[in-house]
Image (cartoon, rainbow, N blue to C red):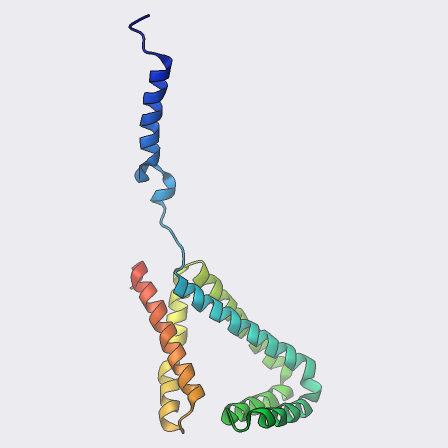
Length: 187
């Protein structure tokens, strides 16, 4: 009996072997799979996309609710805006009124376009949040394509802080998504 190993010793040595094997990253299948988590900056872009999608849906709801009396509502809203804010963002308000007037004439078509736009925003947000490669490409191309156009309008038209803010925001988003694409090895 003196030559037989104690049962406790065999359990300790086997558990030590297993514990060191279990703790080794290459033996755990979870460590062999690539991690796919979005960075905080990409999650911020995804949240921005969700906000844009919700804003579009709110616009669609307003159009659907007020399309029969939109002209009256636009006059009231524009007068209220001018009373509270004066000429702040006056060109943007005028542009929004013109678009809304066109939308009221073809409101069903505009609703479909708004829903399509909102759907794109939500799909992109989901893809970015889930760290999908296609969403990175969609984001860079989707924002990057408008930068030259926004820059052109900023140069040829009178200076506008709103247009500058949109341009800078889009440049920041392209940089954030591009950097994350480089980090992931996509480019």
